[in-house]
Length: 323
Image (cartoon, rainbow, N blue to C red; front, top):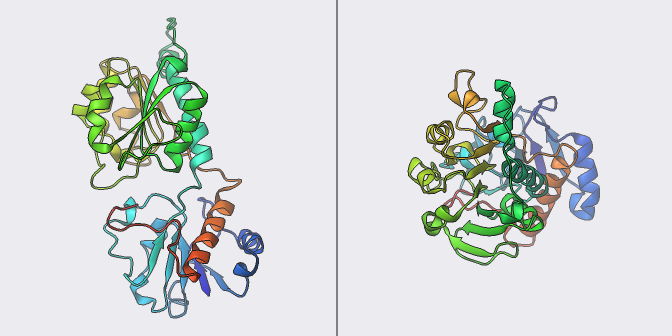
């Protein structure tokens, strides 16, 4: 097959390098042999022959994939598909695949860190440090806390694993109510409002879709107990950001650890920079530069094997659901 990596090899966002492809193809055995492989952002030169595109969503947005008559598979190097919605750039004759599963271990460790930061009041102490203010505050053990995790994909599962190690009471919120091995209880999304009043830490790890935009609204923030904490490793627009800032500045919530934001990079004038009891990280919770590309390529070969066998690829994106 003609496989085209549509990215610039010197881009800062860790594009797949030819040597990484060679190593993955070798791991794949016969499945990795006999392909024509190209690396460039010159789509016009390959569009008549290309059968597979591997690229991040922002690169996919830059090309006319409808002009590629042989295109069969589009492998995104990201898990989130919200930037491609409503998917009108995706030819209906091609399958859109993502790399879900790559982020679970790394993001799970980040979530463990964030949980411990909240239980130890680190967002408060970060605020006091900036203010040069000394005032003791005592946290509690994580195993006395009740965490609600919204979204039980790879990232939510990674978070639930570590919450289980910390002895927390874990409630999972997902589409459907299928039990999860690391959750004490699992509910469908329509039960979220009932769960929030008994939530000490709310962790958002679900995809951004039209149904989950502003999932944590001002009204739902008000349902959380006084002093509750919020962690967001999903997408920034899952949260009504102004309402969260209001709740933190008013002292109603105990703290927040956020890795994703409504606008990225955060503008210098955004009030979120000075919101109290807030820890900000620059959208880095799920990426491991030592493993990300290798894992993504291994997922691609799993998808390719299923496709060639006439089966459904494991990370096929459901365009009606958006993930």
